[in-house]
Amino acid sequence: MIDGCQMRFLVTGGAGFIGSHLCDYLIDEGHTVDVLDDLSTGSMENVAQLERNDRFRCTVGSVDDDEVVDALVREADVVVHLAAAVGVKLVVDSPVRAIETNVHCTEVVLAHADSHGRPVLIASTSEVYGKSNALPFREDGDLQMGATDKSRWAYACSKAIDEFLAMAYWRERGLPVTVVRLFNTVGPRQTGSYGMVVPTLVGQALAGEPLTVYGDGRQMRCFCHVADVVQALAGLIYDERARGNVFNVGATAEISMLDLARRIIAATGSSSEICLTTYADAYGEGFEDMYRRIPDITKVHALIGWSPTRSLEDVIRDVVAYHRSVNPAPEIPALG
Image (cartoon, rainbow, N blue to C red; front, top):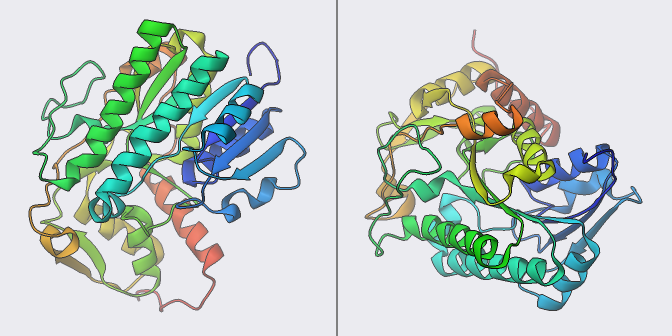
């Protein structure tokens, strides 16, 4: 909270996975929260616990609706723009939707925030680093995109445009903007419907199905608990020194996809096997991926003292517990 002041937040995409957790946090801090979400990937179930709170309001609608966005931004003290096309599967299957959603909706939010002089936090992604091998990724590092005929990179490019536009508003018009590049955020309420790996593997393990791992399984990722990510977002929202800057937010401990699958099998007590499948089978010919993606979080730590506090074991445990709570059907017998 800024100097103990209660504020009104507008969170676009607030009924989504990360957005709903941020709303929980802001409400607990004593703030008022307006959510704008078209429920294309979010769900009212994610914010059901807040519906009776008189400091929470959810508007079902699109961020490309100028009239709605203008009214909500006018009432807000701070805007947090999380609404975006999410997940590799969605981006590969619907690249037009991904590009238009990401770019146009960010244009709308920034234009109205500028009109009313409201500070904005824009959620970006580690995908903007593309095929770069300059690890760990630094915010001032070069970006390396793939060819334009590979839809895999459409999402990365659209989010990079969002960042360029946000920084342009900061430099040219003095709009207080902060950009956060998120690295593989995981936790309760995340769905595997759009290609998110941890909830997908957990769901398969609990159902006794083979765990699908793409490629050779040696690709490395870092997974950060959503509760840690929300702490970083809140810290950056509250700190005026963050404005005009880009920050990486994510965990730095790497794990291969094969080892991740093995840990999930162990955590669930599943008898499932691991099934390697090609990227072509999953996403079509020509799909490209990167083997490693690690953030340098020196910048965010130096500014607000943030670093992740929860381990991968915590992440897996909480995702498993969530899946069991929403899918209480009998599971397969445990190993042994």
